[in-house]
Each structure stands twice: as C-alpha cells, then as structure tokens.
Length: 103
Image 1: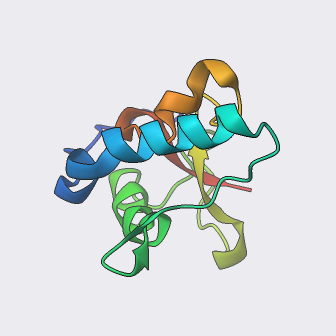
Image 2 (image 1 turned 45 degrees about the horizontal axis):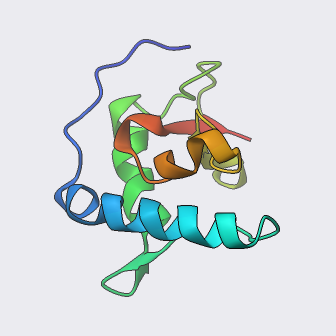
C-alpha cells in the first residue's frame, strides 16, 4: 500500500456518516441481497464528493498498487473493510475505511 497522510474527514461526512452507516447496516441486515448505493448530500452522490478528496491525498495514485495515472473509468473508491461483510456494514461511510483505487 502506498503510504500517505490521510486528510481530515470532510465536514459533510463527519456530520452524516454515523446515520448513513446505521441506515446501510439496517438495510443490509433486513435484506442480505441489498445493493449498496451511495447516499446523496445536497443532491450529489457522496462518492462524487469524496473522489477528488481521496485522489488528492494520494496525488492521484492508487492507494494500493501506486498506479499512475489512472484512466477515468478505472478510478473508484474502495472500502478496505468490505461494506458487504456483516462485520463491516457499520464502516461503509467511515472515512478511515475509504481509499482511492484503480479497478
């Protein structure tokens, strides 16, 4: 994994992550087939708000393999602890669990 200094958690995420994590946990617990869709903040998907911040903290390198530059279609936000694993549902919006990565 490429070493980097994690930036401070964005204010909108700090404000809403606990609620969004709880909602995802409840949704996934009720229906194991539930599909993860990023919640919206001010009519923008949270991943669209987070991607430039996560890219910036790694100077646009993949957090895992250090690939650079990443093609637009290869850019994603990875959940280090998988959001689909029951042990980690509560980390889906946890700032420390989100990484800029290549596909």
